[in-house]
Image 1 (tube, rainbow, N blue to C red):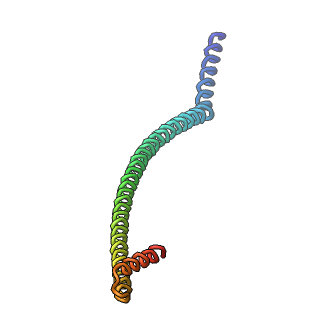
Image 2 (cartoon, rainbow, N blue to C red):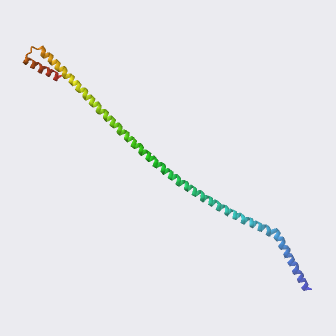
Length: 162
């Protein structure tokens, strides 16, 4: 009888364990397993999101680096074009200045030549006036050659002093 009681206890303990296992599985294991699965999925999602953000950041970095290279090349191109343009403008200014200097030089040369010609005409006119004046004084005198010579010398002396 003791033996049957032990067998009976064993069956009751086994039955209690099975019932306890089923109850714990429904109440405890299933929620804990679901919580763990959700937590695992959340961690996986976070890792995937982090990798996605890292990939996007790397793509943005590469894009910005490419834009920076393009901007640098464009800046160098603009600078080179500006230097070339300034060089052309400088050459043009120098060429215009040389032309203007040449024109001014030619104009000064022409003006000098004109003034020289005018001065020669003035001298010629003065010589003609002097000759006429000397001639009239000589004719006014009594045709005395020594007297004429003296008059011419006096006249030239007066005009030369003037």
